[in-house]
Every structure is written in C-alpha cells, then in structure tokens.
Length: 524
Image (cartoon, rainbow, N blue to C red):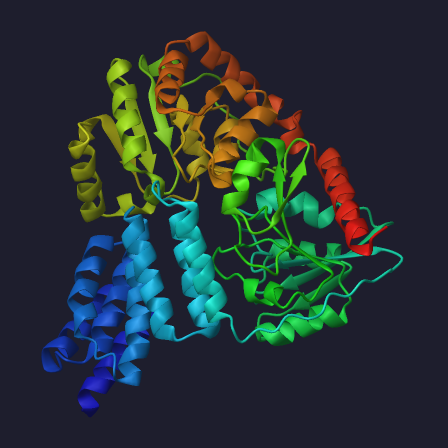
C-alpha cells in the first residue's frame, strides 16, 4: 500500500531527525493499518532503544519475535536484526544468559560470515558479565565464531627482518573512546629508533584524537570501507611484524582480519579483558596480577599469555577537575557508597554483598549511575530488583547518564566494584578523583583488572578474592574517616607516581616483550 509506505518513510525520517514521539505516532498508525508488517515493530524497537525505554523495547520485541516466518529470506534478515536487538536490551538489563542466547540466534539467522561473527562477538562480550559461564561455555562460543569464519584461509607465516620492528595497531576506536585512556602511551610512545607504527583504523569517524593519532603514526591506513580479506591483504603488503588488535570482541571489532594471520605475530589485549578464542591470535597481553596462576588461566585462553612485570595498561587521564578537599561523609555525616559501572554488570552476587554492606554501615547510602535511570520505567525496574534483595530503594540514589559524570565522584566516599565484569576505566576514574575502590576478583582474567589497578597504585588490600572479605573491607573503610580523608587528598598523586601512569616504564616493558616474541618467531 502506497500510503503505508509513505507513512513508514516519514517515520524513518522523523527517527533519523531524533523526533521520536512523532516517529512513534506515525508507526502506531502503520501498525493499525498493517498489523502484519513487521518492519514497523522493528523500527519501534530501535526508537525505544534510543529513548532508553528498555522495558518498552522488550515488550515490542517479545510481540514481534514469534511472528517471523524464518522460511521467508526477507523475514529471516529482519529476524536476525530483531534477535540482535533483543540480545542488546537484555544485556542492558543484566539478563546475561538471555542476551548470549539471543545473540547466538541472530548469528545463526545471519548464516555465516562477518555479520554472524559480529553477533558472536556480542555474545562473548555479554558473557563477560555472567557469573556462571564456564571455560566450556566460552569455548562453545569460540567454536561458533570459527565455524562462521570458515571462509577465511590464513596466510602462511612470513618472517621479516626490517631495520625497525613494524607494529600494526588494529582498532575501531582511534577517536575519543574509553580504550584511549589505556592505549594512548602504547600508540604514541614506542621508540621511533626501533619501532615503526602502522595504524589500521576500522572506523571512518574522525575527531581531535584521530588527528593526533594520524600524526603520531608512521603510517595511517583507513580500512573502514575494506572487506576483511582486503584489509588483511593490505597489512600483509605492509610486511607487519606484530599486529596488535586493540578491540577483542568489543563493538566494531575487526578480529576476522587477524584470523588471516597477515603479520608474523598477532596479539590482542588492552581494549578487551578476555581471550579472543581464535587460533590466529598468538598472544594476549597481560600482567602478573591479571594473569595470576597462568596455568589455571589457560583453560580460558587460546593465546599464549604475554605477562608484563607490573601492569599491561597505562592510564592516561583526560580529567582536569580536581578532587574535592574532603570526602562527602564529613559534610553529610554518613557514608555514601557508589558504583558508576554499567547496570548490566550488577549481578545477584554483588547485590547480596551490597545489601550486607548497607546494613552494616548505619545511615549509609548508595549511588548508582547509568542510562537505565534516565526513565521512570528503568528506575521502577531496578527498584523492584533491589527490593528482591532486601535493599530499600529509598536508600539508593539512581542517577541518569550525564556528560560530566566524573564530577559526581565528589558525592561518593567509597566505590564498590562489580563482579565478575569488574570496572576498568571506571575504577581508574574513581581513584583519580580520590575515591577508594573495593574490588572482588576471581580466576578469570577479566575479573582481575581491579586487582591489577589497585595493586599498582598501592591499594592491593582493597582487592579481595571472596565475598566476605569484600563486605568486610568496605565496612572497615566506611568506619575509618581519617583514612578516607587521606585518600581523598593523596590518591591522585599516588596514581600519578605509580606504574599505572608511568608511561616511560610501561612502554619500555612492552617494547621488550615485542622484541622477545619476535625473536622467538625469528628463532634467534
């Protein structure tokens, strides 16, 4: 029907102009006139996602998903998109298992290749938050990724002996992105006398960070419009010694390029905290704290673990704001805990611990901050979950997304980390603002970032390996206001003087590791 198509086109135009209410009104008319036309439901789900109305998005998708005819090729494509959206929204809501299975369904419907691999990457990233995800569960997803990459034939390994070691960095995040807080030194401070840097940008987005990176690199390549095979061929032609994938299974990644083995050696890490699970990636960059018992870690890794002596990340803070002179407990008379991590990282285990902490510290409060709190439905949803764990929602300050979230650390006395997907840059930001962080770690590599960060800053006693100690450390810290005073005043200086922000020492350690693995490949 011409009128329906026109209305749908108008709704799309309003959506692109971010006039969401107008778009929804047009789509409502389309749904009444053509209730079996599934594109209108799918578009409504996209709008609800943009609005942050995650519960309404779930309702739309639950109505839509059973109605697809998967024998119809056109509907199968739409269904793959819808299942991906369903995975994403469940991830936002902390329903990790549902998210993983939804992404896997989307990958299956995509039928293989890049799009299927993207959905398995989404599933692997979501699984980072799962408490009950075993090494076997991860391996099943790695096998999915490999099966959907059956079209890839790796290059034969080739050894080069250039005057300088050529290091290629593969990333979709050469813009202002949280990963830049950790990779800046790695990208800009390698010794130009011994290393030549090549940047392979998987994004066409450009900002001031991009321009700085472009000037810093010896060679800059925009691969955003290239296929995986074309990008791999370009890297091969550049005769790269070490290809460093900075994205892992995060959004926009080009891990399939690494599967071609276009360089002598492929490495991953820094921007992603777990194994890629791919045979073509040779090494994963870690440190003594994150690697822990490397032999125990091996069941989660397909790569060899490359262990740096102190830290495998180097924090470069963009924060200009100074911490408050005193912790807020001094003015308010009670302790405020806080977690600015993604809501989807908040597991049942952590809520159980937070309940015990709040009960043990009289008059204490908790600040949570995430875009789920932008809407009344999101706040109601979280309130219901808090009540299920015996936490009074009136004791919790649910704060929406804001561009200047760092300033709100001045309202927090003690930050509480999530588990098993712990904070990374979020933890660094809290510490840089003078807020101590209590972190729980386990056996998986990705659970140990808090341990590594805190150990390098000199606060290793705030990283613990069991829930009872997590609760006790938080409660003890809440009872020591003099220590909170000292930390508020000195934490930033402690960080700046620590290995975590010592870019010169960090880069030298990375350079030595690069040279060592290349010598192994060259059989020196």
